[in-house]
Image (tube, rainbow, N blue to C red):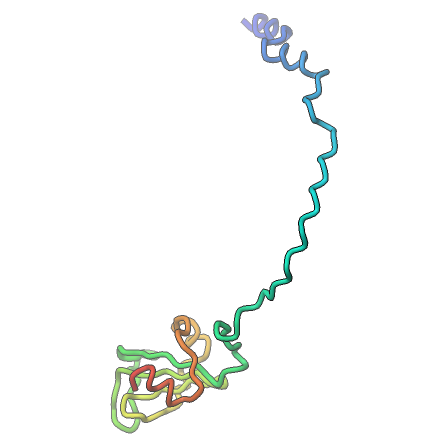
Length: 143
């Protein structure tokens, strides 16, 4: 049985015979350098920056960012509540100069030290608008 397999291995298969015949042939166009492309007309130089009305200011050009937080805010197992009026939901969370502030519906603000800017960035979505004043932003958010 092993002798038959060895005999077959000594003989070339049909595919091996065809491959051996093609060894000396070179396909047409092989080894010929590709033709150089024709020089195109010089295109007009285009400014690749967005128009000014579509540009978003960078983080160092804004005073801060605000996001609404409708549900109760639970931090370290405690529910955050306004120190002045006791409100515990419908917050605006402000991130400015590395600090986090909470603003209740009544307009009271308090600094929240249990939240950092990393938490704010994880939970805030993309900005949908930029405003020149704090009051414009409050109006936009319905406060």
